Length: 440
Image (cartoon, rainbow, N blue to C red; front, side, top):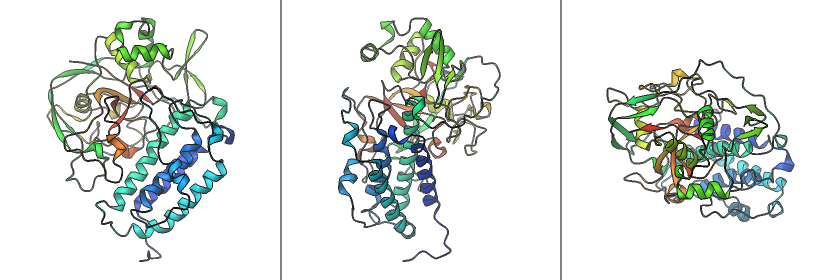
């Protein structure tokens, strides 16, 4: 079967092309000599990710859909999987253990040529293997967009002189900020996605949709800010053993953790480590910290982190019992509603987008920083792993990863859907993640 000469390219293939361009731009921010750096100790060197994004697409599609043979099995294996060490062990490979950038880029080029030559034709037919090409292409697109965010916070940790500087979006004036708590009426929270919604894409951990009853509680209207977190530091939060779990205290002590990973001290002033420059610390922007640090702050404040269901109820619920697709309503995400979809490299004040607030008046829920919950990442009732990617979620149902919701400035709009779930270990400081507190 041949594609008609004037056929319109399927939207999913356009999305894949756009996602490739986005990640290509990220790699182009790094001088060649820095591609073998490891900005975050727990992660691979940057060069791995150049090969990984294409190897993932290739390993996902070539046999299942396109009936293509491997031309470089060693690279297919080398670049297949990232790492997320949970036992304290860190990778010990050397830069010289990796192939040359030229060899990796040639591998990328050959994969794209091979896939693109067949995908336009394959997109016109459905697979009989229990899944469709559209499902696999959604996986490929969102996997790459997830890595666009992962790469951003990895590159954030590179020395400033090891990045090609980009223009920074100017700050917008915002009104004075008065933190307060908002009462969230008792009601229901619908978690997850229904398999009956055949037109929606979701990852395996998003299924099955179910309803949770949520008693009345109060939640911070805004995420905890840098200014509020400074009060925690000044109050001895990092020195007070009673505020930390045993594991959190051990981690903090062994790694000399005394402030957020995105902060830097210059004399008697704190600065935010921006992507391309050190910036004066914005007291009204969200603080980015690990789950352990967020939990210690919540205990210091006499509060707690929200459960996944509480976060959903505050974000998508309404006083009349109905639920919204997005905090602000049914309109799709746009730049007036939050700091997301690659609009900015850095956070904005938490009150910069009042139009994006929920029906309860809770603000800055989508974008500007993921938000930690107290819920361990686990399967929903009716969970079934993807047959083509069985370990995507199940490998992390280990009692060591916590659910985060909301998204950051570098989160793609498609992953702002209500059912999307993200997760990280409690001691991981580098993701663009903050938090807000609740009182029950």
